[in-house]
Image 1 (cartoon, rainbow, N blue to C red):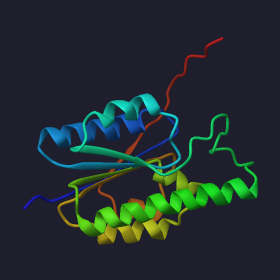
Image 2: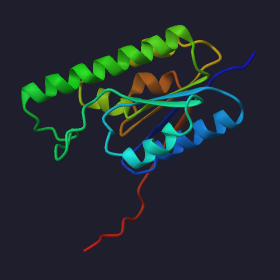
Image 3: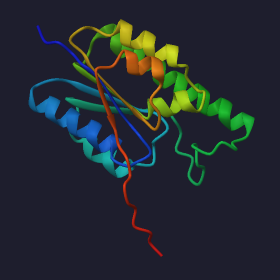
Length: 170
């Protein structure tokens, strides 16, 4: 029987989602089913439009509203908006729990979920419990800007993306 693995891609640099998508594409090439749930990263619509063409093998879900002109990463959001975003994130997380409980894929990508921990929308313990519940055959990939210590202890494959140089466009 297939043994699943847990991986984290984190850091301030760009490319975490692209790496996770690449891992997902490799998985569908091996006849595995992939589910990707995006948290706090819904402005990459061109990337997900392409992925929609790969359904039903590679399914992408978003639960947050597209708030044009609003930076959800901004720490200065009003309380009403924070509560609304928190509810959407909780819906996405509950859907992830359903995917884990039903075992309907061999790879689950939780894109941007670590930022939800960083911003206080989810607790690290929520993700730790989800890892414990996952079927042994399921790959589990999480992305975000931080590496929570408790998750690091439960994860064998951790990759940090570091921006070494950035071209400033004038």
